[in-house]
Image (cartoon, rainbow over all chains, first blue to last red; front, side, top):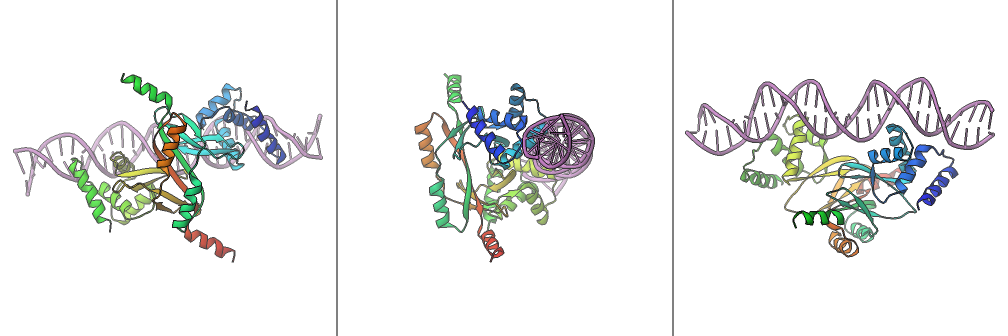
Length: 149
Length: 149
DNA sequence: CCCCTAGATGCAAATGATTTGCAATTGCAT
DNA sequence: ATGCAATTGCAAATCATTTGCATCTAGGGG
């Protein structure tokens, strides 16, 4: 399903004269295979599951590299660094479960109005934003209820 | 100006049977004296400027303590832990300058509508949120312009 | 006002995530 | 196939934060 996405990104990189290494392709594939935000340890483990045995420092360096090239995005969630693929200029926020720490994308964003309000009320020039919603995912709501049934 | 705020908080703590120590009062005073979000080093330095010479580990422990007692709030901004006073149940977001890292409070929040949209579109139960706006503060816009005049 | 004790603090060492220097390796243009 | 700049592995360094333990202190009871 996501092979196409990764291949497109890889082609973009090649077009820029960048090298395609197992770490780079591997991390893109890992991130392309899920909707979740992943932390560094999860990425490291997923790589070896996929047969890509790279060093931790390579994972860090590659995540940096991909971020700087705007291919992935790094977010800090609950004190943890998490990463996701940036597909075709999408604008997505995340719903983060306070119990199981799963994340799901959510495609509505109130920023357009917000930006106008800030410009009207202040002299601050808004350029970017982050928005995260914390609560309970469907699974954890069910579990919680069944605990007390 | 903020002496009243701090005294009110201190009284709240006393009412709960908590001890008032120099570190606790000092940190509340430091945070009450500014609109900015402060990081740990800034708080540590401000304390000594105010004549409160406590250990770094005490600063960390006290910040934890005050957070757990809902008197201050901890946010992670640009990879840094920052703290602010929680006054009278206000609901405030922050405008964060990408250049000088100054922060200013902003009192509009689009969450009420957002919450309804999430409930309508998903099975996620939204409880809390974080929203931060990044851009350039008035000062840095001016400086930037004068660089190119 | 002094004493007592739970809780707070100082200090130094431990931790855990991330970064870095350097030598060895590898992708890919020629 | 060859050469070189860029990438990687490894181990050590770094940085913020946490922790164990001995000492100290805020503030309630006498």
